[in-house]
Image (cartoon, rainbow, N blue to C red; front, side, top):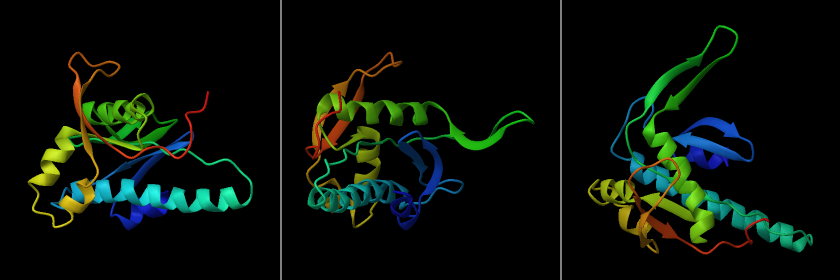
Length: 165
């Protein structure tokens, strides 16, 4: 997964158990960041699909990948104390991205993105925008944990593996 992040000009912020958090446009934002983030999500799925093919050939069950992408401002800096200091991103954008990723299991999709990302990508002028958004569907406003207002979400793809119980 980290190769997909770096190949898409992203930064790997941290590993979170069986997940990763990546950022695009940190520390300096650029006009290609929204497209790069969505290209990374699609590249991750292509890589997992290839891996799942090898797993299937070996008689192993497929791995399910869920990706959530949101667009917005973050706070970038050190958090912690002298004993343990971590350079990371913080803020509502990070929390919303995590909540959107959690929606992939409820909506039974491979990728969920905020309408904020869709809108900024559509107006970015990036020539990849149409291709990257191909197959995404408006899933409407979704209630997410810890948010007073629903978040407008778009979804893509049917999972290749069932939701683990």
